[in-house]
Amino acid sequence: AIQLTQSPSSLSASLGDRVTITCRASQGIGNALAWYQQRPGKTPTLLIYDASSLDGGAPSRFSGSGSGTDFTLTISGLQPEDFATYYCQHFNTYPPALTFGGGTKVEIK
Amino acid sequence: QVQLVESGGGVVQPGGSLRLSCAASGFLFSSYGMHWVRQAPGKGLEWVAFIWFDGSKDYYADAVKGRFTISRDNSKNKVNLQMNRLRHEDTALYYCAKGIRFLEWSMPEFDYRGQGSFVTVSS
Image 1 (cartoon, chains in turn green, purple):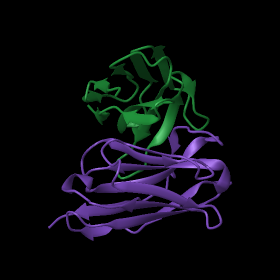
Image 2 (cartoon, chains in turn purple, red):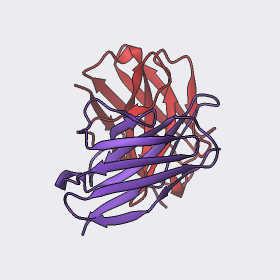
Image 3 (tube, one colour):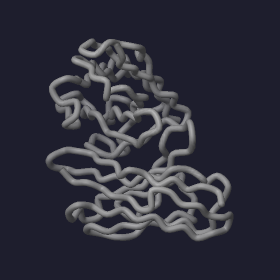
Image 4 (tube, helix red, strand yellow):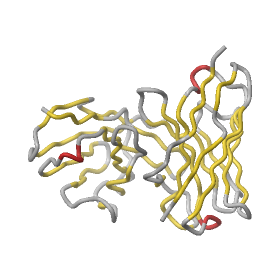
């Protein structure tokens, strides 16, 4: 089964900072990667799908890149509502399976 | 607006059974696959199961295969998760979620107001 490793597991940043989170897949997955945000006590929200496509409800300061095994989520200009945990996710067509990374918690410095 | 309301959680002994339900509204339920995703206390997200829009196929995480069964009733806009032979490690908050793509196996979209249903497996 494909494993997703996120780094770092947590980070501290200030308002307005540019933040980058990395997700590495244990084998090549093309661009079948999504990013979710989960605020404390809330359900996850889809930000990015197909590695770099911004979901309709996500702010444009979020961007995704990468393909194969290495992917990044970038937040350009951290806002107060962005302090949350971020998960990458691989969606496999066959065999059907869905895997989440371990998460990256973004905290206020 | 997608609305998903989970119910049926509770405390159960190891080896016991529990059935979760999720009532859906705000979208054409019969045209979307549905997921269950869980989150153990203080831990990350774990995908559990998916069922196709018409109930014709279902998929499971290895951790629950053979113990959990996902089903749906399109006449009632409900998806269920029957959980048997429960283990301590099944303790988690269980969310249902809608597939993002019409008539396809696709990644989950959650209800932003969702509360989930908590399952505690304890003796």
